[in-house]
Image (cartoon, rainbow, N blue to C red; front, side):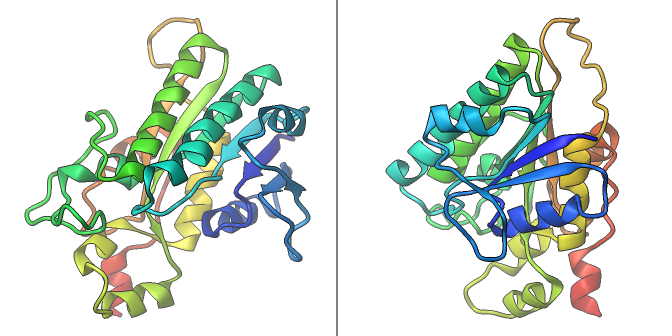
Length: 264
């Protein structure tokens, strides 16, 4: 049995992450910023380093989802939670000898390659450039910068400590009915939506595999842990984020496709 702590457990991705481990033999500890009637969670402010370390005592894996998720957030609103909170997560993981940290990164860590409108980080240029996890990061916003910082922290802690890290660049999680509604709405770039869609079913799978799959040796020797960066979107016809590495490194097998869903 693996003991898995999940920060940001009350968020959209967090709730799917909790469902991902239902009916498994893993023991899950939800961590939220405040109390919720429908989640029996540990309440924690991730900027409180001491409390963070105490919460992770006895855990094996941390799925770190807690963040300000807005791609239009200003610098101050992403700095403390997204950057300082993530550094606290890694310190707490090392202090408690965790085996792995799954860091919720984002497509916005590399979306400047394909952004269309400079003031709209959720726009998509035409044509698009395929982006692979080993391409240099190119954030499209302060939010994207905070995710690049989190990825870099993971690489640092993996190299210096015996902890495995999965930087999981999560797309746009939406139920199919919301996907269809937004695709016809006036305020959303449909091409960006179709490229970035992550279905709830695929979200559960990619979080579960990121937390539990055996990671391939990176060939860099025996010191430190493994650091893997992978993309988490559905098998969309219009995607530009490569899923090859996600399939091979953590065994992700997406089952949904925004084009199929919207053409039904």
